[in-house]
Image (cartoon, rainbow, N blue to C red):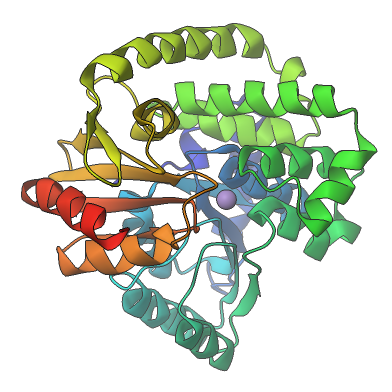
Length: 357
Ligand SMILES: [Mn+2]
């Protein structure tokens, strides 16, 4: 399970807090009260990490950071937590493969009187929103603003001034700083300052995907209203990512393949999402696909990007196609992802090429 818990956090502050909570809980075991606040959020980009940070600032509790292959495992894990009082789920889109089980798990949580808030901006089946509202899951969903901006707007009264900067960085990372709320937030700050902060934060997140404790530390630092440049060594970590990316340009030029409507490439030694923009750009096509094998899951993690000229909704096409092939996927019109069974990756690419004609 790709799940990280704050209990193992490197931060001394949290360890101390935890011990105190445990003591009080031990005394209260007779009453079996639900006291825990958990936020499950996307671990791979600044929108997910920043959403978790603002939820932590507003409501406290622990963050559980996951990627798409680990998303449902995390939900199955928290549903059995007898101490869980409130659950926030942020920046994690649903697909045809996952949405039914998601509603089932939410139903169980609601039966157990757990307060659930789902905040997201990925394309969603309207029947899922209906089902969730029916069981009184609080749904905050707008495809036109990034998740952190929606968290900020919904819980502004519980957040400090700095939260608007965290939301601005998330909007930039998700290409959504031109949206109604996102652009208003960006106007508060110097554009260049916001851009470098968002980029440094993003490269720190990307460079630490295999270090769950560091990602939780980032959540805590952002929740404590730290700027990305105030996080120790953040620019040095960003520098490492910049160098890796510049090497990626050369690798993509060499290894990228093209079909009529798309460019594609298997990535071996980096994340697919870091390479996909280069694959699209350097292929000269309007759609780029980068895919990386996840040996532990027997799947490929796939990233798809469309240029401004791409007129189809890639998230919807990928959702259907991935489900047909026994995987899952979805997202936005010009940026989405999928989990594809290892043996079906070639079929996925050839079928996608046909469908975006
Ligand atoms: Mn997002």
